[in-house]
Image (tube, rainbow, N blue to C red):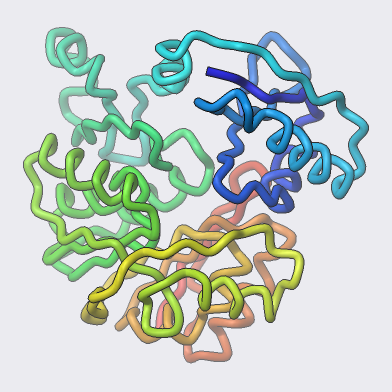
Length: 310
């Protein structure tokens, strides 16, 4: 396994994620609490792709005004596959929830600690969502605070953490979708681990929701520099029914680009997340103009999540 990487100041991490035009290359970050900088990484199974990945990372660095050096190294496959486990630990969230990695489940049960909380047992693999990220945490807190016998839709389900929490907290029926087949598979596996029923599907917002290419073009019409690439997500996807409670934890620019469609799914409550704080008011304006009002917002770090209601 090959790692293409650079070290940058924390303030540049989110901007770099925003502008990185990686195609099939996936950018990740790692921060050691004993270091001042964050390492940005692209892992590759094919060494011949290292040059192209390095070029794309250099281009993104130039866009955010960084002169950081891009380097390449070889890492053991097993270390790469399991590296995320070092950072995903048992952690209480909100009033009633606790995230429990599958590899720590036995120890969690034996300890008896936090046994009064509702456990979300997860192995995210390559999917987004462990509860560590500020946007995920804010969404979980809102789901916990507002739980009830309501229908629920998780837009951009990732590991399934939000919809699984909803199912365990009494929402019903619960559904979720993602544009990434790996994420949908991870969500289904994690739902089974938690003994809950969630309708997960491969699905994309925009233009009939059969391919991302048209969706991305629509988003770029609003944000020309949006660093995303289209991919075919297959045909035959059917729209979801509108839900009482919708969580859209996706990029801020996409929330704006697809505000009409997102709004059409939310019967009452909409949680918008995945938004860098400087973009939040623009996202809010998009939904205020579509009949929503802001109930509250949570800002954690550089990210803001909004609780909206019709």
